[in-house]
Image 1: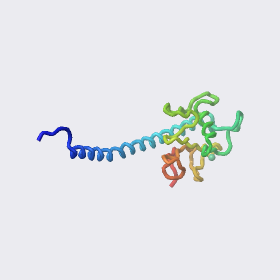
Image 2: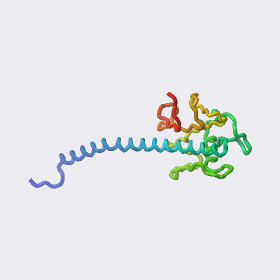
Image 3: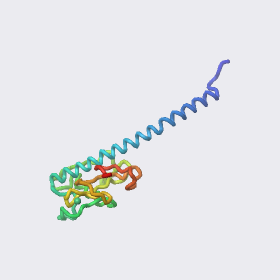
Image 4: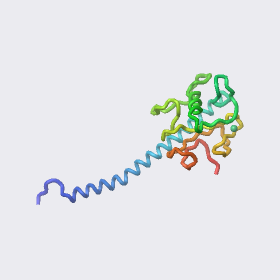
Length: 171
Ligand SMILES: [Ca+2]
């Protein structure tokens, strides 16, 4: 018997095979995207941390102060819940400082030029040891670091266990 075109069975077999392939490939590709975003966030929290430490190394104070001649030391400062603090720290690190030196640059792909956003669109959170006692507080826990940088993670929520940190959280 000579066949013209595909039989219904042949089409069904192809559809089933495609379905199986999709079921295998979609989670793999999706998972890879998630991993890549987490990796990018880890790289970025580390580079912000490095930028702050380089700034402190040169200036001997944190890249945050109030007003034109504001105090350069004072209580530790956190950008949690304050885009204004975050934006000012970034402004200073991007080159608006006495030496006019850029300690950091935003990724070219990022549209926002004021807030350094994580791969899920939330600004990274910075906690600066402004009193320079070598301790910064993370959710009430003392961390022996000059600067803490973190992303709330894929869910954008704090303290849900998927945060991406520039430091090691004590157990
Ligand atoms: Ca401190």
